[in-house]
Picture 1 (tube, rainbow over the protein chains, first blue to last red):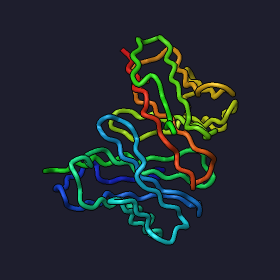
Picture 2: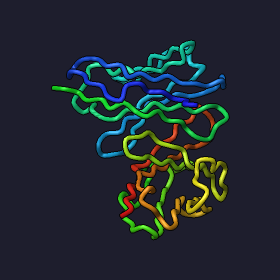
Picture 3: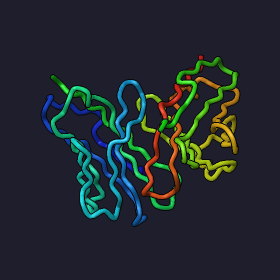
Picture 4: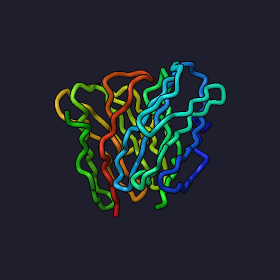
Length: 114
Length: 115
């Protein structure tokens, strides 16, 4: 069964506007971590933001925030004030407390238009 | 503080040859993970190692693939008798310890092309 689902293969956003990238997950483990990574065309994986399952508040890192809705098992990434350099693939990932690996979604390709 | 280092960044092999991919974790990290990314897909877990131990290789193909993390030196992912389907980006990540609260720091990846 798919553990991480990203339903948007591609998204477009106008420069300076906000955009939300969707991510839903599936787990029965009460302890888990959720991660978002950015992969630009150069190929490296850049860590953006982390949310722990027991965190009471939504994580924020600069222009990135994570809209964590635990009951709905969603962890959407919100990018405010989009910049041209935000154009990239974005991957949502989850690591369950007892597991060694991270499970990645299929990714969303974000294109920021000038 | 250097990040995770992988080399080579690009590797071209002909079918039947061997590919050796190297990964040096971040300083102070003793846990190494290997992932494979096929074109237009997310990363798929392959193997998790600590120094001198394979902890979890549930994502490794049963044949031709092996990994090690010796006491000294980098972690090595070895692919014997490569086939065209092995063409992918191979990422190494490291973390200081296990647990959902530890981010894995990724290297820049090695892009393997099998001709």
